[in-house]
Length: 553
Image 1 (tube, rainbow, N blue to C red):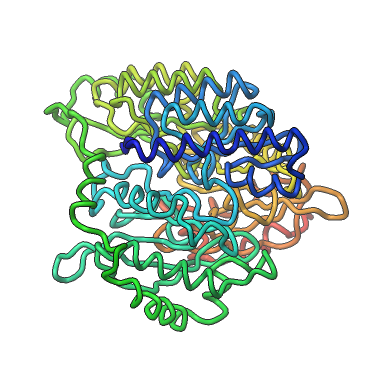
Image 2: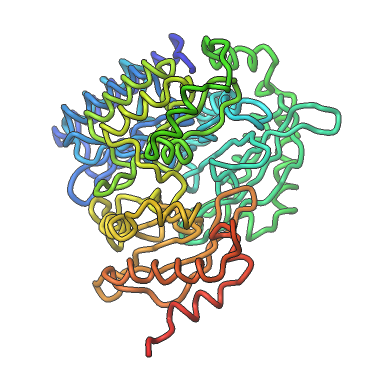
């Protein structure tokens, strides 16, 4: 993983000192609330419903065991003993006291972490596939390019005050997209042209929120060296032309939709002519320098033919269930990718305690070269586990609440903090998630249903990505009462789609029954082996709407 040099560390340390001074001045009455607002947002600090919330940057989801232990320490010392994994792979603390935040930032800086650009109208954390670098069928490891983008975007002087927040994702997998690339302001797919040269397909104008849109292709092939100059051009066009009079219409997706994809691409190409082959052009030396931080660990020469593992799987059904759901293929023989799920019954999705964070750090040191990855789905990955250690790892994970074998299934849901914490939310998300977890707690039933993405948001800001859930749930306010709107058919994969609203909203207590109706329709209509999203696309929206709202005799 990337290790700070003296310049990186100095930048972060100076920001910590700067914010401490700003906070001291705020408490002394020298800064008004209005003056302090942009300063705290620049350091990832929000004021939520009951307390401040601090969002910590985790670039492309990658953490060392030492950093995870520091997060555990912060949760224990400055919060209420837990943290939350967000859909941008960041870590959020929901209960820090404002007076402690400068000290928390200093603690983070001691392990090469910060909260810079995790909020505000700037370029946010760049994300990628949580299996990058270890999964088969990827073209190349996407993480070095994420790091190049991180270094370019951090404190970029032109893009500190954009019309609205800006999000970038990079994907390099041929057939899968675990980063929801096409739902970003800029989505970058690593490709090769007919000559075998490495480059990027660039998509612009995706996003969720009030106006969900799938990104459009604006550059079919961008040579590798031009990555940053072209991104500069896209951001300049947006900065100059994006709306600033209405925050609900300020995202780049609105600009692209308003002027059209072709006209937008033309503007970018015109701006790019001033930047192409200029100082921002990537040299092979710089690309190699960054790639040098992402070398393979010291893998042993192993075989996939592990007789002991085969026996353990045949003799232990619980282990076999976990293996089949939570263990993924690794590109190196004898190793596997393990996902530790944070979706245990009774636990808000994505929440993790300080003790669990310490255990994750210990597990990563013992089984995965001291490296941890957060995921877009609010889980945690150990990317390099020997197959002959899987059973032992499973036993420890199970004892610590990480081994629910529901990865990719209905209860592996994405859920924002909702009205329990967020001042913007129209409704609570966590109680709905808990009710659905309790209703569908039969693992045999979940495995029979197969892969289903269920996402829950507490408001139209869509932090729970409800638009791209196969089943999406959105909290809405109806005359002061909490209701929930259901959408179907969303998908974050390579063929990304926005879900379609089923119909009028439902009361909270109805949600388990309504989701059960949706699932029963799927079970009735599916062809053997067909996923929910495939059945939905085949039979259409109307059949679900008619049967869900049909009155009982």
